[in-house]
Structures are given as structure tokens and as C-alpha cells.
Image (tube, rainbow, N blue to C red; front, side, top):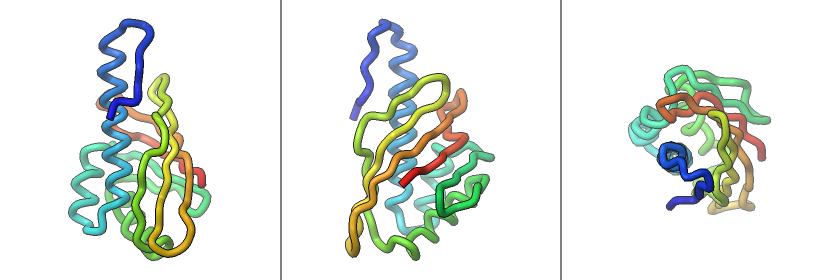
Length: 131
């Protein structure tokens, strides 16, 4: 899936955008996993060691283990669900945003948007979630 187009002709920019897109899709897919090992494996690829996460229900947490624990504990709040990316991420200056949808087996779907920042290795360094 390639959401991004480049009008500048800068192929390095296009390649980096493709890498960021893959990072965000990998991150989103980690929220669909139910086993700690599977979540941790995906997070280790896309999440910087000291990255932070916060949303309206969660105080700021830091690190790979903390985000893995949050994903596991989110099943208690939401139950089984499937996260998907709704629209192309928008990116500039090592930051961006993307919209997502969580479809639950029980209850109503939840739509949200995450603001993110990333480092030069295209790993997430910060997520601020809105839903």
C-alpha cells in the first residue's frame, strides 16, 4: 500500500515516506496482536527505545515494554477488535498524523487520529492519540 505521492521529484523523500508509511502500518498491526511476544516483536521494529505514548485515557508512558503492556491491557477496555488505517498519513519535518478505525466484535466502532513523531531511523518517538 503506497499512499504517498511526491511532486518535488526527490526520490529520497519518496523512499523515506514509504518507510514511514510501513512503520505506521506495522505499529497499527501491533494493536491487532493478542500475544505479548508478537506485539513486542512488531514494536521492537517500529518503536524507538524511549518513545512515548499518551491519549485522553492514558498518562504518558515511555519505552517498548510500556507500549506493549498498554496494548495488552487495552483488550480489557475494548475487547477484541481490528485496527485499520483509514487514510494516508500526512508527514513533514519528522512528524505526521494518520486516521484509524477500530472495529470491535461487541459495541460500536471507534475512530481516531494519532499524531506521531519519528527519528532518522524511521522509528516512532512519540504518539499522541485522539479518539
